[in-house]
Length: 345
Ligand code: 1HN
Image 1 (cartoon, rainbow, N blue to C red):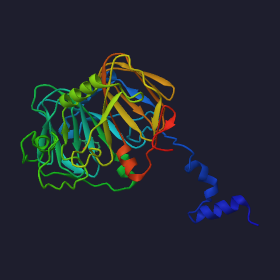
Image 2 (image 1 turned 90 degrees about the vertical axis):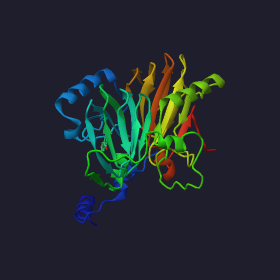
Image 3 (image 1 turned 30 degrees about the horizontal axis):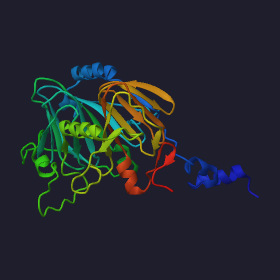
Image 4 (image 1 turned 45 degrees about the vertical axis):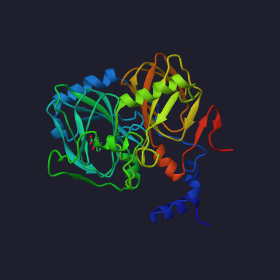
């Protein structure tokens, strides 16, 4: 009989290993994210972003972004296991040159007003609280022709695409792509409960790529006047693709939540890894037993299966995005609200 160590050595030599050595590490009874709960306070991010503005131009950097890296995943360029996030600065007169890639991206506008991002021939003129979808493999560039800096949060599905090693990227021959439609065109076409007659939209991302905050705020405050909040979510709505009713992006789910002052949530957790950014208001969030105080423009990370409790100290809006859109398509998504699994009997 061969000795166990010799057997393992013989297997290793031939690029094999016994599954029984590793099975319990890979087939887990429940999710064990590597990422940990974490917060990035805007008062820490803003001065460093300003410093980055002095160190490098948007053109030189291609994108002047400070990556928000999960403290438990240093060097992995991600905020949670499955998602990338970064804070981007574009100064007056700058251009972030046109390119495209396999990853899907979202922008959530934090500061400044009037700079643009062009996606596939149309400019979105950005205001704080706006949500913008940059579908994968669409040309996109950003420009700031205002006299004030513009800051937004980028969210990308980089780790998801990387899991499949399906990445391509290209630089455009021009710094800025030509626009072929006026600003607002996609919203006029798709953003009012109307759709162009006979149009078959077969792209996986939403044809409405710009969701201005003003309309989202109106919807959520109107709802709050008309009924009680969800005990776990507050007034949480998801951004939808008007042509399908599904998520606005194929891999990334995006939400806006309105909490009224004094709201205190019941426990919730799900398999989604989520990134939140407060738009307005202040509160506390308890993530897996750890408490974080948040205010406007602070970003926090909620790893998969982390129990989540929210307390709003003032009226507050919180934007968030997660990998739920991808998980639902692949059949992974599970959620537990108030200690009961949702959708399972
Ligand atoms: C990207 O294209 C942008 O277009 C921002 O602003 C961040 C991070 C990694 C890869 C591509 C942008 C990015 C990115």
